[in-house]
Length: 374
Image 1 (cartoon, helix red, strand yellow):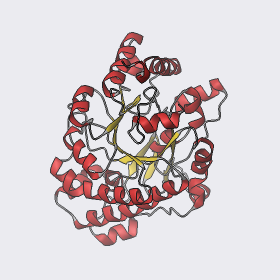
Image 2: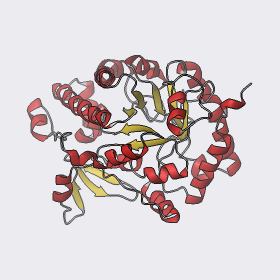
Image 3: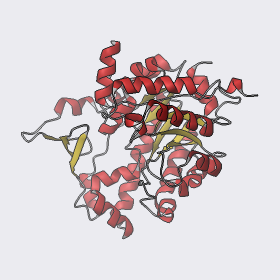
Image 4: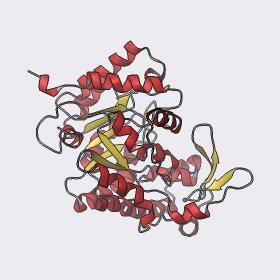
């Protein structure tokens, strides 16, 4: 059984059990550079419009060589943006969305929101930069990866900017949350324009040949939901219903995973009703995110992808703690299929390369072996 068939069965797109739980992982730039150098592999970075996505949709040669069952692709910045981007004397620059960026320790910091003064629809029309999905230069790396891996690996298309909450970065968090609560008209217009871009980019990735899409919104904090369940259901889920309908019309068997960091249990069944197949990233040790609790609550309607702790256990736990953690998630979420075992986030720079190798070794060792079931 190859990786593609293993994932198709695990996420319930094909009948029958997989031979084992699929595994996956994303590495930060520091770890990608270090391990790629050790193994003599070109990481093939895809420079994406939103920087967080780089570490998710790049380095597929490295990822598969280490044992991942998934391949990830996404849109890159346009060739014209690359050619014309200017870094100012203070080290800042504008990204494709018009956000002012500055190099941080591990990531680029957003220090300027282009819609921070938006008060009406005309302001959005003037300042919201619509990315052009028709620019073929955006998809050259994705097409290369899809052609290389399409027969053997399950290919997900991913993009953090497929998200109404991404608009928080364009407006500024405090203003965005306040204007949502007061139901400012310009936000409805902004969400609708963003919906159009989301669908266009998703359809392009489907046309190129992805098996699934993973996108969503960080509805949760580490203590609970950022928004009320009513606001999520009334304001955001109709947005996602339109995307799901458009994507399934283009590819009925498409795998759709909803990405949400934080504690999101109160709206997970709503997410399933919209039409998503799975929940990513299953951030551990949060209210409602106990693996057995999740499996009992919505394991009948959603598969799970993630769960392993990047905040404490992966970087700082003992080998025994890491092993127990992995085995527990494999056994609970992997029971009766429905699980892709993965860290709940990009593995960060506080984790050593040696520890990454140990993580992968233990995932392979304890991957739930379905053929051993009585």
